[in-house]
Length: 340
Image 1 (spheres, helix red, strand yellow):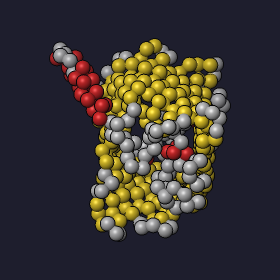
Image 2 (cartoon, helix red, strand yellow):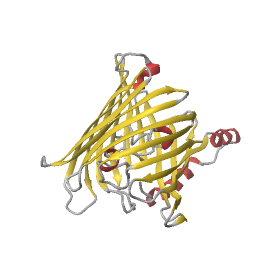
Image 3 (spheres, one colour):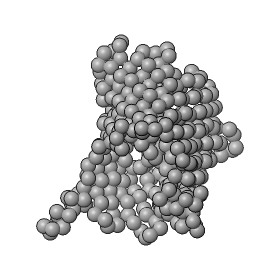
Image 4 (cartoon, helix red, strand yellow):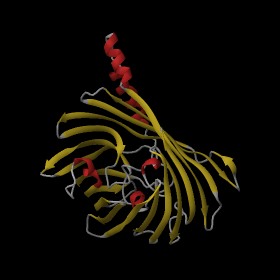
């Protein structure tokens, strides 16, 4: 993720517009519409062939504004990797980075459509949109959801939901308007991003309460890498979420080609969570990633996750497979995530 300087200026302008002169009762309602929250996580990683590390991964602050009217606001500012302890480097914050994750305004056009403008997570698949540690079962992120497409963009999106009989179809259509101004050293950069996602909910006809627990998604995206002479890439993806009794099954699969039809990478994962009892869940995941300019990566993960409280997860997992991509090292990981 990146820290986007133009959006800092835009944030001041837009918040100033929100803070226009109001009457006393309207002013009270205005300020009461702000809500502050966030999340944080830390983990202990013991890789097979690297130094063990204890890390505070992030402190993320989320500010929202919503008076129940057509206009609403969402902002997320994250301090990434503020502290880490490694045997060779002791306690340090060398990897710390301040990141404007999200900053956008939503405007409700009608019952079936909304407009979003600002910086937001790219609406591809499931993991990229729900990647906060308290919302996912594992401490490690599937490689295919990090390496094959842009994880965030600055632009506009039209989104909403349309009923199709017993099935609801959610749609998201988006386009980049301003490229990122700064990236981490290890981050893949993209530009000229545009795409769409369709999600079909309630496929099993179990009613509106469980509609989001049996979903099939279709993803289309077009973009270029932020490198001289980069070809245009076309990405096709499928994702699903299925919950049956004690089981939750999720997965995402992606294939990428250049505009002239050449192979440009593919990958995906399938993951299961089984409710063992007493808020413990047995987690398994298989994943694969192929990039033209890198070695293939095949990974497996097994672990246990405890829902300590509705907003707290304690995770234990073993990661195995190929050696490629050392940013997700093989070995043992335990983490704790909390949302506040």
